[in-house]
Length: 330
Image (cartoon, rainbow, N blue to C red):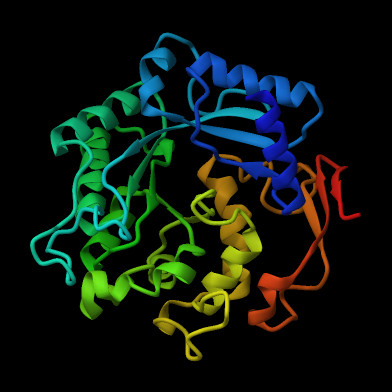
């Protein structure tokens, strides 16, 4: 596991990634921590904010470690849990049936009361939660669980996250803002999902789906990720998708629901400052400023000057972590 982890970390550094939020596990809480600690000791400088699988919750509870504990290279992150499945598999939990499968509304991975119990348990321990929620029903029940935990034990500082938040509605966006969650989104999904997403949910629901511009306008913090290995980890692919809303071949010509496109600056911030904010690290990373960690990449061209369609083709020439070169293109 150590060898595989180190190989993966080197690959991510070559893609211009300096920090990751994995939600993996190698046979337990302590065992996974040991793998990451050894990787760091072996000189792999990729920073890790580990989102811990809910299955390890009892192990975490028996330790003094809580969200944010650690150092600049390895920190305890959120407790990762699931509310529903996937849109592609028609298991994302929807409020109304699938447009292309009228007898099916998807599934909740656990009953609503169980999700509420899990969220409160993590919340009461001082742990951030990151809930996988793709369908609008899953987003609603996740928000209700987080809101319930906050009303029972106010801890606004925990920055709970909803992961994916693909199928939304105006009411859900308003509620996300009210509850104060971070939207942990993966723009690269759209480059593949657009082939069938509208068939799944129909044009009315599609208007409020993958709605990055609307969420930003509503004041919801967005953190950009890839969900690798479901999609490639390359951040530039995610920036391209968020800015163009086209597939990797540049289709459709007029963009897929172009009103939800965001600017290059907004997309870059999502993958830099946004990711740092989701990990309570915006004062240490996410931008190049005096006093912050010197984590940055050197690209083959300026993403703010090339055409939006060319962003995905930019190359990572160098990745620097803590002021030291961690990767250099041969």
